[in-house]
Amino acid sequence: MADFGNDPGLWAAKGIGSVAGAAVSLVYMLPKGRREAGSRFFTGMAGGLIFGGPAGLWIVAKLGIGGSLSGTEVMLTGSAAASLSAWCVLGAVARVAKRYGRK
Image 1: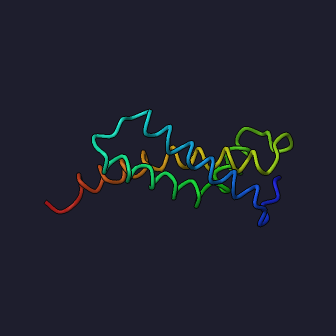
Image 2: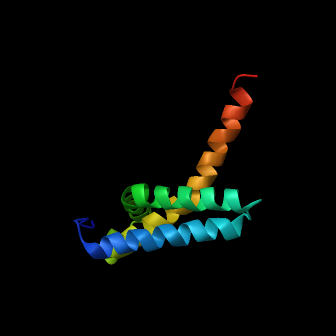
């Protein structure tokens, strides 16, 4: 498996993956305004930076391609996937809270 140390290249991959995932989420589902676009972008960035490593390791394990990817590629993939899915997860949580919340 990949060794995630304190390598500047891994931090760069994590940042690039987070930005890429957040940008794709904005294009995939267009925001209603500037405020929503900003909140979605920064939510995606935070999700990609925080969960990029674990998401990358999970994806590599599920696909069974651990030996063929470098740590940078695993981090880039995981950050992009976590960033892309962050807004969808928060949307689902908001819908559940709205449905079962106080009326």
